[in-house]
Length: 502
Length: 133
Image 1 (cartoon, chains in turn brown, purple):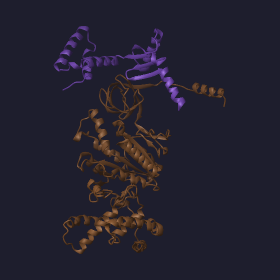
Image 2: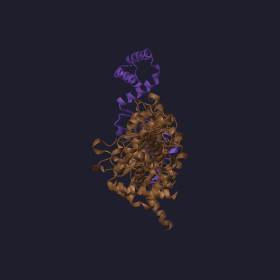
Image 3: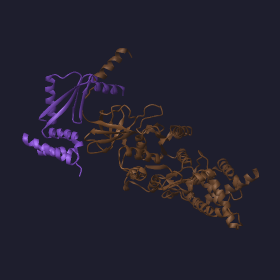
Image 4: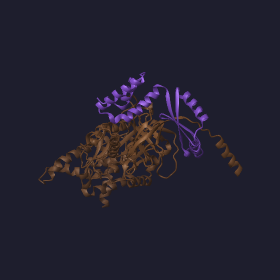
């Protein structure tokens, strides 16, 4: 390699450069402020077309009025001044997509923010897309294993479902979503975590946790931080969903967490008010319902003809002081296929995850549960419901008949078993084994305070000496007689060992 | 009923079309009275601007802004006028020459909200992007 060769190459490159001059449509900035610009000109601009500002930032045309165009700026708007020229690009706002995005942290425009270099994209997907229609869909029938006993047993989530996680601040909403992502290891699932208006420190902690536990091998994190403009927060979930659709179109299963949609609604409210769209209830614009419904409708289970892929969505909503009847919570509750309701009271009582089993529901997930789980879960639900009813009586400490006492004792143990630490997802066969044990009274003679230790040792025992039972449950997926016999045998044997070990 | 500046300008164009000098004087006086009566005098600047645009559009007159590094000479202006006439099918072209040293060379033609950027500055930027990519 000599210098002449390099110079020759450079010359030929420059010689080969051809520049053609094309007519472009331009507009002029009339006013700009708070991330929203008003432009004149731009006669043929399309709704949600990308615009290019002179400082290199992109914008999106939102309001097309008779005399002017209202646009939001996707990025910093300092340096843009009145009279600046804005070019239209002729492209609808879209994000780059490819397999290379897995394992990366990106902003809503698809640019990497993890300092690991450029991401090579194959295609670009529009961020707004009409959801899959009726004929392309199939009803939900495969489970998403969250690894959380209480959810997998009583509020099961299926692939293609939209399950809302709702609760006050600091009740463990994000923890449930992150545990679910961690548990997707080896489950042939691609995960996308969309952080909307979150503190950068929280996002950094989550990315660190996902990396440490090996979950970044199948996860993309889309971040619109608290300091990013509202426009980026607004497009973040759509961008995450577009990336998810790319994988779904390839027939893959995708799990998307939107953390959280309350902040998304706030960002949209800010943009709408600055664009002078009329405010409605709680100052949200009239189309805030549609903003969320068109996003969540894009989650789907496609049928085999269309590749069989799926997008499962776990939107998160933060309530204020447990008020689920506020505008955004009621909207999203009515859109989703069920909700996981977390309560601060339960959280402080030490019941974690702080799930309110009574009002948490899954409207479609039960058809995605494996048969074995369905069997134990039915009984579990009943036990808990009866326990809740009788618990109030027990407070008075009056004499109770044997049956009632027994039900209360069983209930206490069930509640103990359903407690689960963060970052401790559990395989479905282990869940079936322990839930079978508790619903069939095998733990009734264990002290309530010792139940969790008992459970821990039980799993250890199953893992070390009764692997075949777990494998049997995992392969058969139902509680046929031989499975029950093997499982009961294992439990009894463990109890003997445990008793003598003490 | 509120009227927009565009509606006023269109009306003004329609009533003055093909009228003599004296008649136009009367028309404008009447038009101004209407503006005052409707309380729309604040729209006057917008109406004037709009009227200019409508008049130009109807009569095939095009106003073009041409940005160059140095003042355009007469031959160049002739050439540009011919080019713009062909491109937009106009009867008459009014060229406004603007000097901007930052474009390094070449010219930028702006007609309405359409822009043809043939400046050296942009071509260099484009080449830079291509060589880096």
